[in-house]
Amino acid sequence: MFSTRRDRPEATVTAQLDSLMEAAGDAVFRLDMQGTILYASKRAIDLICPGAELVAKPLSTFILAADRPAIDAIIAQATDSSQPSKTNVRIQTPGAALWIELQVTVYKSEHGQSELLAVGRDISGQQATEERLRHMATHDALTALPNRSLLSDRIRMAIAQSRRTGRGFAVVALDLDGFKKVNDALGHPVGDALLRVAAMRLSETLRDVDTLARVGGDEFVAVLPGAVSEAEIQIIARRMISTMQLPFDIQGHTLYVGTSIGAAVFPEHGDSEVKLLAHADTAMYRAKETGKARCVVYDHEKFTQPEHDVSMEAAMFQAVRDGEFLLHYQPIVDARSRQIMGFEALMRWSRPGEGMVSPAQFIPMAESNGLINLLGAWALKAACVQIRRFEEVAGRPLYVSVNVSPRQFRNDQFLDIMDEAMKLSGLKGEQLLLEITEGILMSDPEHAEALLTAMTSRNVRIAIDDFGTGYSSLAYLKRFPIATLKIDRAFIKDLPGSVKDVAICNVVLSLASHLNLSTVAEGVENKEQLDFLAAHGCGLIQGYHTGRPLLPEDIVTLLKAERSMTASPAAA
Ligand code: C2E
Ligand code: CA
Ligand code: CA
Image (cartoon, rainbow, N blue to C red):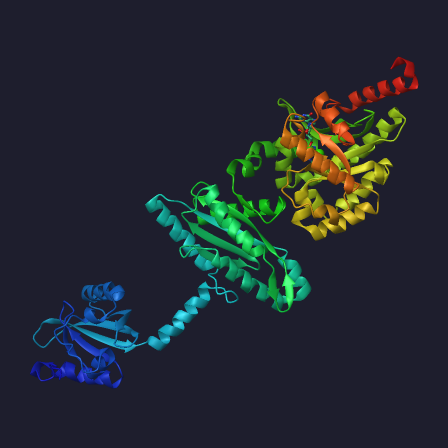
């Protein structure tokens, strides 16, 4: 049926070897130096195809094409080193492909010719276990998605591929909004089930070429080859956001979560795995802070510029010690009577040799390096004390509006600082208005709720600064105890000419009136704007038209003049 060379007298020694190995259950081949089969043992024939004729055929014919280079490599290696050389290859059998461990040794035949002895051992069972282990090491057990380590490989592969093709790709970081609440309230089994469904839904929005990995509790990262423009990324992000907004039916609960997304593109936003992941993450936090359920694409200019000015940062620490920061006060006036009702305290940095540095430049940096806590605490105290002084001059109550940055708001000591400022100055709670942005409320609603409740109990009021620019849903206006909306200058600027701005202002003013909130229009620069706002029910006005931000001594002069005018109305 098949021929062997066992009958060749010179083969006796090796024949003994063969039978030994065969007894050990191994498949034995002898090959010439080109890899052509000279002899195949019974076990070898049974392994490949019982009854087949193997002699004079290249061994590689029976190996899966993908593994043939491995055979060539170990033959070369064995020849080179005269040492046994091993590899794992799959052989194609009439049934499934089998994994065999193949060991190749060069030996001299009795004729003095070099030949190859190849011994194969069936390791399919072991290989399957290894594959399972490999899968476990590279996948997340809960969702079966790739884990961080496989993600890392995929990103590196995408980088290599992009370098070849010149076509970039996006790394997208997602985080479920409100997942922690579900987990805390309903327990981990519900949380886990929710994550599994979320993973499935997200996978369905992606293409075959994309990778979706779970990298932490409720954090996912997707690699999207070819998605490079903001528009392409937003289309994919929109699909992911939409699918996550659908209710989740989990173990009898109907749950609502959502997702915020940040994206970074190779190579513009980072040329390494680390940078891409970090920048996608930064963008995702921006998305959360600015209202959630949205996708923000990383922007170098916007996200990093102030933080990277190292010399300015060093100077800032020095400036805090040297007392170079001061406050200007901008009048906030009644829209009808034009009377000054209060002031917004606006920080300035009087930097020697540089003049006045704008807070737009140094506040973001102070926010990122933590100095804002120190500066903000100082500003709050200084403003409360200053307002009492203004009241004495004016002879009537006034209020002060103080900006609070996200980091201050998150600081555990903030309430204590506020209490201290009021105690120190003797200012009443109702005379203090704290200006925060929508993002602060939305990034951690539970914390915000607790803090705002504590403030309300002291009669301290809260204003939403830059209202309308945060993309937020309006639901939070119901949830939180908010007193005032400050309409952003962007909507005031083109009043009353712009039809759109007229519509927006009207909507905001009517919303505020229904919710019993007071309104301040910011950045009012001329009489037309003022007249429009007064006629449409805006209560308070702040802007260059009614008063620029001024030093305390200039405000004192202003208030003195006002008082002398009201004291002798004839002079008015
Ligand atoms: P903001 O809270 O929106 O402050 C209003 C800004 O508009 C101020 O800029 C003010 O000078 C300017 N402004 C007022 N009226 C007009 C007008 O009629 N036209 C124009 N074009 N602008 C007007 P400023 O003082 O440069 O402050 C910029 C930002 O820096 C503030 O925006 C606020 O977000 C932040 N900031 C200022 N002081 C503090 C502070 O003490 N703490 C914190 N956390 N942030 C502060
Ligand atoms: Ca403000
Ligand atoms: Ca503002």
